[in-house]
Image (tube, rainbow, N blue to C red):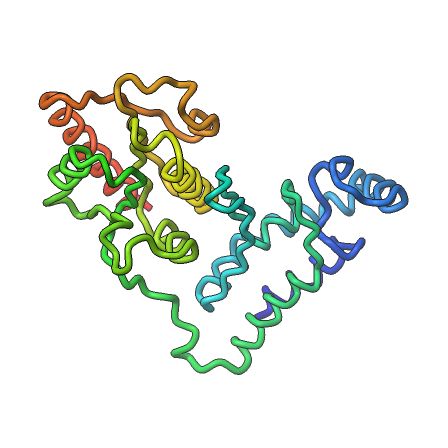
Length: 276
């Protein structure tokens, strides 16, 4: 509790303007007086030391919040019908690294810290246990359900692996709401993405971009495959910044090779998880 109280005081000092200062203030619509004051403070040594201290404390505070089942997450994404990447931010990261179009007021940050302090003061022990996973270990499959040969290769590759495939279309009611998909991506060990002629356009592409953004925001490993013939220009631009892709053919030999590559990726995911 002392950690949270100390963190709260330092955040109060740091957010002297009443909100989380953006990384590039000039890119935001703040009045000139606020911009001038902000730029002056950012150059002062005490302010820089305060920023460093908050950055050092943040991982420990985030762990406490996780143990208390408090998840202060801010999502920035367009509707799937419009498309575009989804960005996911932890509220505490925005205190010192606010590179998003958010004007986060410190009262919002105080609210989550105060809730945590309240749980530590008044909550019963069983309420303070970390949330336990309700599903087995799995990788989230971002793909087109029309690609039956790809789905078959995935099932074949992972049939006896410790991580299983998670297909949205297999869930009750078909495609679940965006919040459920967000939770499924967050709980996944990794995201396996498949770009084919069926998935590079229309609504499927929008959903894949949505899922990619979530995975990036959650810090999930991303593995990608593209069908032979699909060009680099037809892939999302952000893809080359977050992962490398492998090419596959839809011939019998190509699908067999794809299954082997998927299996190798699953082994890599399992190995990485074991070392964490």
